[in-house]
Length: 159
Image (cartoon, rainbow, N blue to C red; front, side, top):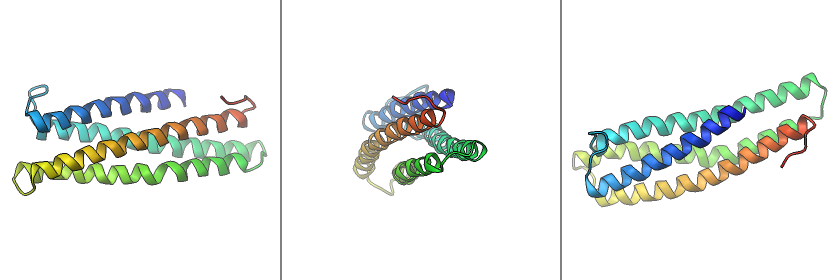
């Protein structure tokens, strides 16, 4: 559990850095590893989607583990309910951000072919990054709540 959670944090930090670089690249037209903006956005989208998918599977996996543990040890279903509440809190903004980012990644091609104005794309890009930060704050709170729920379930007091 700790390995995957820390991996999620590291990949989120990497994704944030790549998104900022890509936004700057859209303004100043510099190359990163000999990649223009379009090519770098493809790499960024792969890392972003991998990270967010890993986060989703983290919460799914811990939720299944909590449910199985409570059933095996005849515990009250409160721990499982708390796990479900955490998922209900994290999934809607996470999935909305994924949708917004996928649209943004598709718009790179529209900007490259001249079908959409660069300033519209850059404005949407900035808004997506702001929403990304908002989602990361929610994810951090949910990671903390989920971990505390698991620790209480295991008989160790949470932080």
